[in-house]
Length: 300
Image 1 (spheres, rainbow, N blue to C red):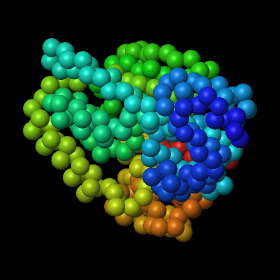
Image 2: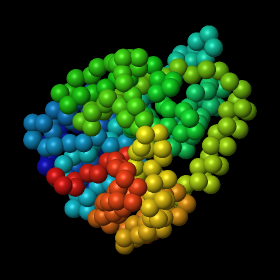
Image 3: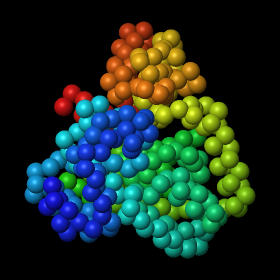
Image 4: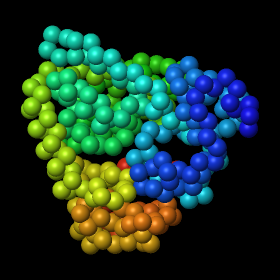
């Protein structure tokens, strides 16, 4: 569709298999995959898509989504090429503005090298800044919103609004940001700390992740949210499901809240395994599990 390119400075790819762009390595094709070059370009992309009646979604690094094998008759927009990083020194640290499509891991490495602290316990969590804020990512007792000052959000109407952290209500792996909205940028307040101490903590966090999580196989991270302060893996283990598989989708022997792709898993296999876990845990433990991952293109 040639008219989709008119006035768009970024890249437009057609009929792109999402298995290439998701950490679980499953998913059928989407109609368009669009990379705007800047915020003005992004707004123009939305205008063109709306005029052509094409539905769209935003995606970061695809680390928390599972796309149906049949794909989506929609456009998927990635803002990973819109890059902005600005440090402003303060009395005891720095106020940092960073674009929403920036890799969280890369951002943590960057501010650690500068001697600024605040997010090192989240080191090696995959995904982007925007995606991490949207799900209020956290680990080792810290959450990304602990040092968040404000965010700029693009809504479904194309309006951009700045929200202060103090005016927003974040929960465990939840946020008030809607699925149709995109975090364009965020501002964090980081404190000065000895670089060696920061590096040591990052090494510890990475080591623990490697020990506890099946990082050697494709996955989407934690599949289910915790329940009443208890991690979901406990209920899955109690239900005797560790190692259970459907096709090449398997509940990790290393961490029961991870589903891993052993090589040729399909999105259907994963969805069936998710439903199996929910059913077994409810019947055996009386607990209702809710997905932390996003399922795209299932059940409409």
